[in-house]
View 1: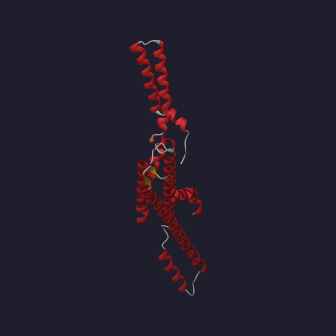
View 2 (view 1 turned 90 degrees about the vertical axis):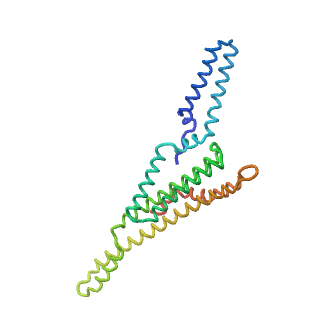
View 3 (view 1 turned 45 degrees about the vertical axis):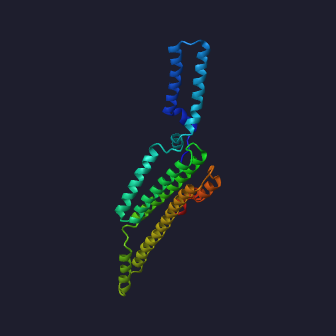
Length: 257
């Protein structure tokens, strides 16, 4: 998840230019319509400057800014949605129902946690940005795991372990024409198949762990309101598992390669 230059985003935002236009029109209107003395004119300029100077502070506390600074507003999110749809189709073609179900459940749980965060925390808070970033890291790492599952399934889709076992049994019965090299080659294909199935099982288990962490975090955040708001200790406890998963997110591909 790329974190972008905050001030650059503020000054490139159309809302910033709109705020500048409003402040400029305010000064122009005061000067044009009221023709005030110079003291009032200077006061109008000072007021407009103060309002425009406060604009970055207000904008940085908005959810729109948070989503922009973490790259959640742009084409990357649309590409992510397209990748998820393509992944579901891949699992349907491969006849792997468990994979498609995990994709749908994972997206639902991520969106649910993001909504809980929006309701519990101010979008401008650093805590909100930090936890939203963790949730996104875990979500996309799990999606990458499922993409690896689909590729692994595709790689062994032409291997029929039952047919290979029967073929080996038939070859071993051929006492006169048994070919050790052929038996060895077929056994290699069976080994490849089993290794890939074990790798797939490990990836699916990691995805289940990610979904559990998302659920745990969402429910824990829902319980951590005190009379003074959110308990900081409660928040840290709620995000502990998610933070650990986010920290390992970049290592998934290496661990399972």
